[in-house]
Length: 82
Image (cartoon, rainbow, N blue to C red; front, side, top):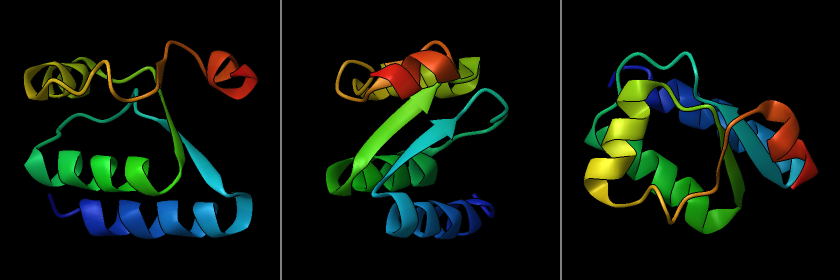
C-alpha cells in the first residue's frame, strides 16, 4: 500500500515519455485494492500491458474479475510484440 504512490509516479513518468507502459508484475509480492484501483486507472488512461503477474497479483485480478479485461502477457517479449 505504501508503494502504490511511488509506483504510480514512475508509471506517469513513463506514460509522459512513451505514451504507454509495460509493467513487469512478476516481482510484486503484495497487491490490494489500492494497487488494483491504480492499475485500473492507468488502464483507462493509456496502453497498459502487464507482464507475468505474480501469483498474488493474478489472484487479485481473478477475484476482482478483471483478468480478462486487462492486457496480461506471459513474457516481456510477448508484451512488446503486441
